[in-house]
Length: 115
Image (cartoon, rainbow, N blue to C red; front, side, top):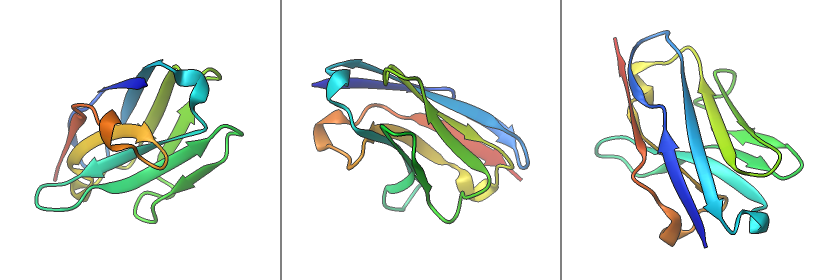
């Protein structure tokens, strides 16, 4: 079992930056890949970025070139650096394994981008 706690969200103006953190605990030695996901009001949750144990990454087209996912070596913390934020990035952001596991969703962290 893995426990995940997201933090770092907030209110930012368009064009601004935020860095989200995901603190993982429990059976982190079992993790092979993790991702950041987001859910905007009235929309389905979507994957934003994924990082695998080798360090390889993948991004949704909507955030490529603006967001960067990274992690420490032990999977204790996974980060999402978000630059050039747009109002359409407004959502609750979650971390989870990749593919996501239903039992691992946390409270998420709210990101609001004002125009």
